[in-house]
Length: 150
Image 1: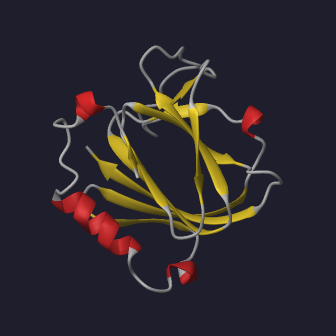
Image 2 (image 1 turned 180 degrees about the vertical axis):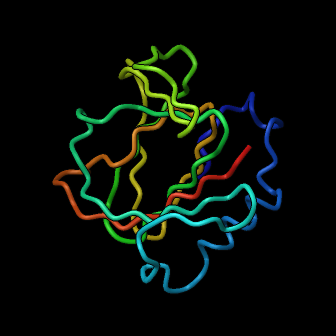
């Protein structure tokens, strides 16, 4: 699944070297053995290995990134990720250029993607998303987020 507006179809090439390297990485065996932390896979591609507890969606803000895509891949656990177009959202706080992170008020509409182990979603800069959401009861997650520079 790739969540995107058709108007952005020709804006990005998901077959470029950064994306092919990132997606090939997710096909490797024993990803669950990677230590928690961040490392550069190749120029313009950062891998973040994460471990955390999911939370009720009501306590989590939507976020966006201006300069990279996110690829969220679940190793263990069950996670909901709220998704909506960032167009028309109301900013919450200020954009942090160091972290390439902006936060947004809860939209009036949106969707929830539920990721099971072995599933991923690719989110573009135009996609506001709300990760870490519990599906039912909170659970322990082991996940990889790959940041692919635009």
